[in-house]
Length: 67
Image (cartoon, rainbow, N blue to C red; front, side, top):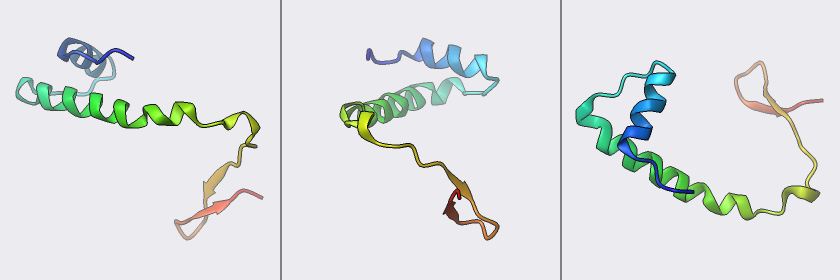
């Protein structure tokens, strides 16, 4: 994936109504690109043989498997 530009980030933020100050745009862009880079290895996981397991919050606020 190509890195996002400040213009990309600004356009996406505006599309969802998220205000991003001009002074913060460089940092937000850098952090988003770093996040996408960190998540890249997940694309190589062999998930085609894994059954989905939905998880919903339980009444105590923790996570419990759906039964």
